[in-house]
Length: 124
Image 1 (cartoon, one colour):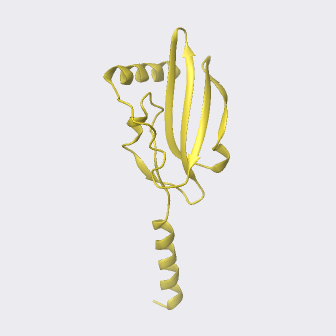
Image 2 (tube, helix red, strand yellow):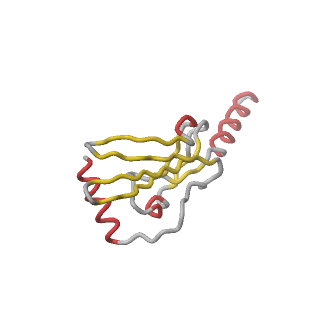
Image 3 (cartoon, helix red, strand yellow):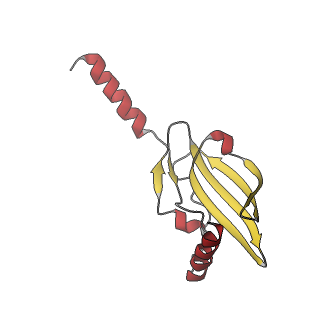
């Protein structure tokens, strides 16, 4: 191996070792703790996202939590979306340190998991 090949290999290893680690959810959840099981390495230009969405379906009001890697344009944004007739208000925040989007400590109960599952079934 020549010197430039070794140098390039070392640079690639150093760059991949410096990627930001964030928690992510496979699906939006009612409990922020359900996301903590899935840490991932983000692409170099992305940050850790924490998103909270509130909505109402009939008399049932809900709050959904999401964690992921995100591009900067999604950070520090708020707004409203409508999916299948359900209006949702969301707020996104981002951070720049490993696993910084852990969220708050909140107990996950069987009831919240069941409600989350039923809500997701009605959305899709």
